[in-house]
Length: 456
Ligand SMILES: Cc1ncc(COP(=O)(O)O)c(C=O)c1O
Image (cartoon, rainbow, N blue to C red; front, side):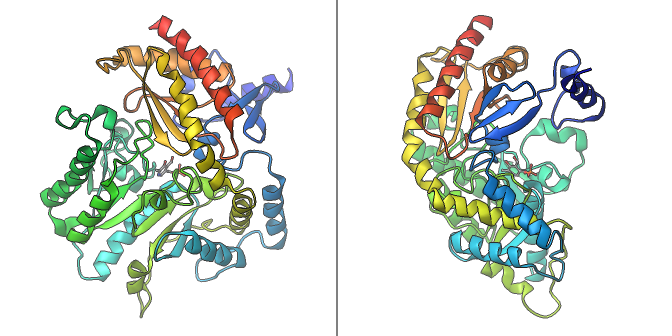
């Protein structure tokens, strides 16, 4: 048996892939990625793929960066591990100070985690304990948007707005409340064509939810700057400003879940900076290390921290590997690369070209909407461009799982064909990409989507 065959056999026998129908691999190979270089990754057989999703919205600086690997190795040799429970270590201190410097406004306190779900979980727990400490113990509910993904742990899942991935695990933590998302392409008829009015309506739906639930019971609103799930919904103009006003009016915290949108994805360190709003908490993970080591966390405002600074007050929450020294060292090296190579400038300088290149696909009958910002785009596929009719469940199943996902991968592009909302293809290339990579993405999408149309 060759080593490739042995790895395939072991993968099928012993490995459990996440959010994956394992039966899909009974008669076909598990895709095994063995190495990466820049925006490309390579499989076991040496075949090259353009990583159009940065792994999973993670690899901001691209693959194969020895400076990040070496920063991790140096730290492991010096101090591989020590907890942030009562102690500190230099790299966590340095990283916290640097993140506070980069973050908007008075988000000066960093609570580290190891992942995005833990960051969301931590933000909800902090909101609940904060209100108990400040004399409003009834505030525990969280408002978030339909189809929004905020993670998989029990608390984060209760914030998540995707019914299908919640049902098997009910009952979840009580208090999750849903409001409409900002999918302008699917705006209600009475708002179609007026993005500002749509934004006002969507923000006001948050106010209506707060009033319906009772303001004294609502702790926080969780929103992504650009909502990922459903296929990249940017905020309509004025949306976040109005949400901020509403949160202030009712004493509700605004959490900007930037697990995807931070660290250059939208051309800024934080999405809140692009859309000019001030959150009370920012949750982050993924791109903070570009994936060279796992790390997440939340940036918390001085005001929220204040009740925890005196007497016996303690945030009763902790995670063994949070703010791991190796991950903290890697994050610092990652931020050095951002600065040295002006990655934010690269995204801002090229984002119009990225959009324009993807918009060329509008000449295909299956392409209904191209939407997003920075290096973060969704392409919605439709059965009828004029009526915006979407596919039936059966057609969507046949199109996405039966054809598109595999065909795009076979054609050398890593991206995501997703139908958790309407069917979309999602793209989030590494921030080092430029026109040649956009052209490669467009070329592959054009060929595969053209073929897909003949199979519907
Ligand atoms: C907005 C958002 N929040 C939270 C999470 C959960 O992060 P993790 O998978 O690191 O737990 C994700 C993951 O994609 C996300 O996109």
